[in-house]
Image 1 (cartoon, rainbow, N blue to C red):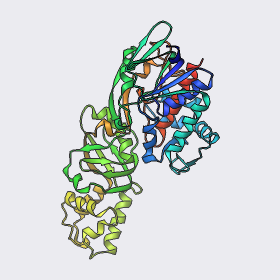
Image 2: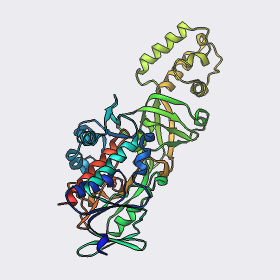
Image 3: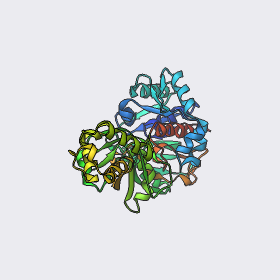
Image 4: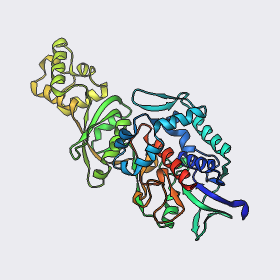
Length: 410
């Protein structure tokens, strides 16, 4: 069917697919962007709670260091289209951004639909044919072209870009379809797993703290020599969540596949244990008649203070002045190193991103072209790559998508 014959077809209308299609079409190639939903960019619209943390302003070298162990694979795409280039790209299209102290870059209006509309307009301007409500069920490869089977419809193309995303947030249409398509063309698929995800723990006392949030903690574990992860934490019914925990989950996934992980939460990361001991002693001296319950409110939320009292074996009504030295030391120790046993992650469907997917050693990182199937390109979360929280994964999607689209146009 000549009407459905294209130079390039892109499967998946998310961040990476939109960028890939625009780059290919801008080069003058007849390009189709095929999306199984009735609208593009559904996952993009809910990123960051709709505020859209679009990238991170770190220079490429540091950006890549934070993305280990995928830094070598991502090096060319990130240097080709780094965070500052993405910000300039958006500014030129009327989308203003702002940089927070954390180096996270958000849209100035904090409305993700502005970014989506800019990407859609870029594709309209470049002449991309946007196809909605068509799920690619299978891909067949001949010597000269690919045939994409979409129910009764067939689309053919010389170059194919798979940008169908991962398997997290399936309600947005991200259901791992791209894995089966890549596998059918010879690619090895690393098992999809939850990444940047809340964690479950063995200790039952966390259920007493469900909903309690801490703005700044540090999390570490004995099984890794990596630096502690810092940021916000929130207790859940079965474990812990929040930005620090999501990044910590990324670090410990390989360990967690082998056995439970012993984690330690530093509730007072700005003080070393000696400084905290001195401060705690000063609090007792200043408030000798206060009970332990009242004393702890200077350090942690009330319910967490009660948990610490239980773990330290202290009656919370005990007056501060009569606390034995051993219990004082135990309290300080718990504030600096609250131990939790991580037993697993929450389900993949609620994870921020997917770890796993098309094996990156079968993809040329300088073009995003398959090493196994000439004319096939892959980009974004369908590949086994991921980064930490803070705009890294959207930047990866945009950089790999743009590189795939430009390479397909050569």
